[in-house]
Amino acid sequence: MIVVKIGGVEGLGVEPLCADVAHLTGNGEQMALVHGGSHETNRISEKLGHPPRFVTSVSGHVSRYTDRETLEIFAMVVAGRVNKLLVERLQGLGVNAVGLSGADGRLLVGRRKAILKIVQDGKQMVVRDEWSGVIEQVNVSLLRLLLERGYTPVIAPLAISDAGEMVNVDGDRAAAAVAAALGAEVLILLSNVPGLLKDFPDESSLIQRLRHGEVESSFAYAQGRMKKKLLGAAEALAGGVGRVILGDGRIEAPVSQALAGRGTVIE
View 1 (cartoon, rainbow, N blue to C red):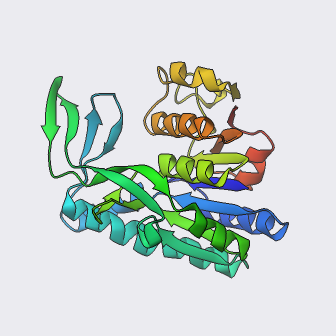
View 2 (tube, rainbow, N blue to C red; view 1 turned 90 degrees about the vertical axis):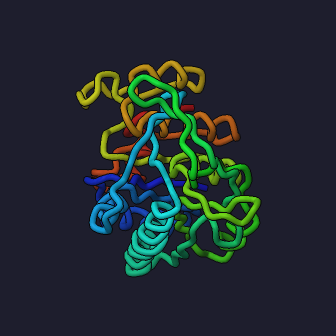
């Protein structure tokens, strides 16, 4: 069982990725995909006159500030456009893909973070009207039902709260939760760099292997989204996933190459 997270940034090769998924599933691999959509959401938000705002938590993680209008734009773009275009491409290659958001069928249940503590201009502040969440439960029976019948789930990073409120969740951590719930052998987190770089953006400084216990110390030099990927990797490994690979989503056959050891392998 392989779970793959497709990043939401520019530069990722969607066509090579989908062709690779088609090749692997055609050879009997069970796969579930989780995707982002940050770049497309930023673009549409600007067009709609509600530009994105990013905040830094007190723990140092950068995330999208999600008020209700932002949540609805995010849901429209990620679950409506990005998800369905991925499904279309996969179906065109013979993959019987099913597009879902984490809110559908309570696939991902999360706690809403209505209040967010952030750091701005060196000062701690509290931001209210926040519609992001933390995943606490995965409806693994729904995923298994689909997988056992030959479908390939394609999951948008939205969740539903216990109160029935839709929330935005981090895609890497959503992929980690899905991988742990399914007991996946491997979780592959694809992005627009070759893996974890010791000296960003120098791609020759790629760290090829990490032990689980070394993940926390690597936060010191991880840049941008890579911090979230490392957090997702740590959560997946703690949940029983055998390996996490930080792979390059810009190359041909990105999943197959990650499985062959290209990228940063964490185990």
